[in-house]
Picture 1 (cartoon, rainbow, N blue to C red):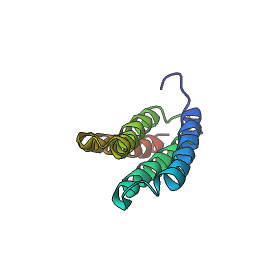
Picture 2: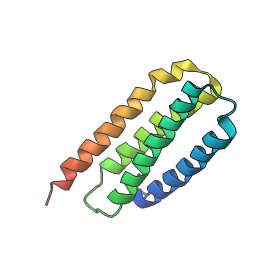
Picture 3: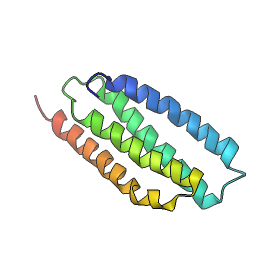
Amino acid sequence: MRNLHPTVAGAVLAALGVALGAFGAHALRARLDPALLANFETGVRYQMYAALALLALGTQPAQRRAPALLLIGAVIFSGTLYLLVLSGQWWLGAITPIGGLLLIAGFVVAALDARRP
């Protein structure tokens, strides 16, 4: 993320989140089992949480570590859920928690870095 500003990453992640949310609501609703659709929607929701956090962190110059953790966490967490739902590759579910841990770490690091003067 050295050359990618958190605001840019957040805006792109948010735009993709809206597009994927619309895709899930319109193209997948009639094709997927409700449990799978819920997994897809969880991916979209957490992607949007990370996107909004990145947009906010982009306004804080002291936030240098958290944005990378949030972006990588969102890509892994949401990405594995999307792939799992669309491909049926259930083994991807074993990777999803790694993304969740990175998201948690990103929010914790953001809080710690916000305490610095």
